Amino acid sequence: MDPSINDSFAKTMEDKKEYKNGVNGMNGQDDFDPSAAPPFRIADIRACIPKHCWVKNQWRSMSYVFRDVIVVFSLLAAAAYLDKWFFWPVYWVAQGTMFWALFVLGHDCGHGSFSDDPILNNVVGHILHSATLVPYHGWRISHKTHHQNHGNVEKDESWVPIRNANFDYRIAIYIFALRFSKFVAIVEVRVAIYSKFVAIVQVRVAIYSKFVAIVEVRVAIYSKFVAIVEVRVAIYSKFVAIVEVRVAIYSKFVAIVQNRNDWWCMIVNCFLNNHIELETSVENKGDSRAPPLPSSVSSRLVSGRVGSGRGRGRGRGRGRGRGRGRGRGRGSVVAILDYRNEFGINRNANLDYRNEF
Image 1 (cartoon, rainbow, N blue to C red):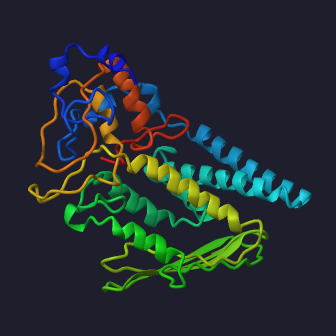
Image 2: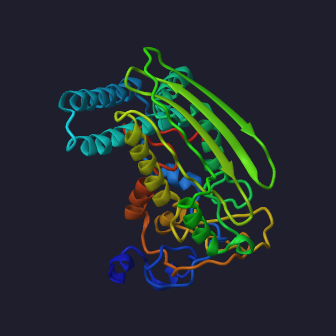
Image 3: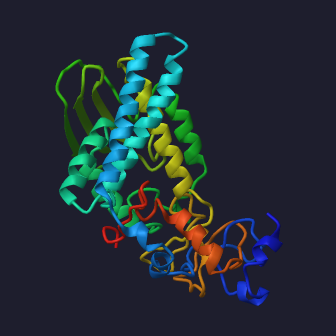
């Protein structure tokens, strides 16, 4: 991008140099410091969001649920009617995308942005997440913890930044090699069961040792077309973070649909949490860390804030620094776009920060 475009939103070059944090490739200022606090506050993000975005309309939210469910069953009916080999790949991708849509609605329920009624949020969220084999309440609690500790090396529960002491590029090679080897670290077995009832039973047994981290058993009984028994065993060591091999047996209606949904989940989260320039923090302020592989997209907002950030302890980062670059006008819009998913704005512009903070 032409630096002059970004310069037009800054008052002076000196003004831009006040900012440590920036997005890679913009203006080529100082190296990015992931340990520096972002030059904006939560209050600044809240202030730039229009008031109508804070209004929750449960009827509008439910309309999205009904719309997505209708599409899901329409695709299912089309697949059952056509039942042609060339249509199944199309169905798997399309239905998997709709499963992701159901997950996103359940995600909004977990954030409390679906409606003002917590009972409605929990009931709808539980049903939608059960349909995609996601444990709603467990996910809701852990996801809230993730948002509250974004980028924290010690407290975050997912997409945790990697410390220099633990960073080893060979881990990725080990994971790739073991994933396609005869040795199984995560085994997932899915068996189609035909039933008229809808229910989910989930049992988790955590065994903390060097070798076994989690044994998780999920039993899901769905409709005539969808029913799954899933078993996962995770084995950890100092060399292998997570090695996963999946052995799946299920009906053509369910099998690859669930995998497509998993792919959407991973793709979205990778974009949200794997930006090379993002803020990280650690309880031990003097601890240095590697370039933060996973965390939040918070640094993308850096250009939309007036004020400068202070480092919370020097860390090591990669990537080019970016100056302030934008004033409150365009920067606020960027802030809204980048933080919609981070702070619970759902597709009908509902929002609830209270659940997060």
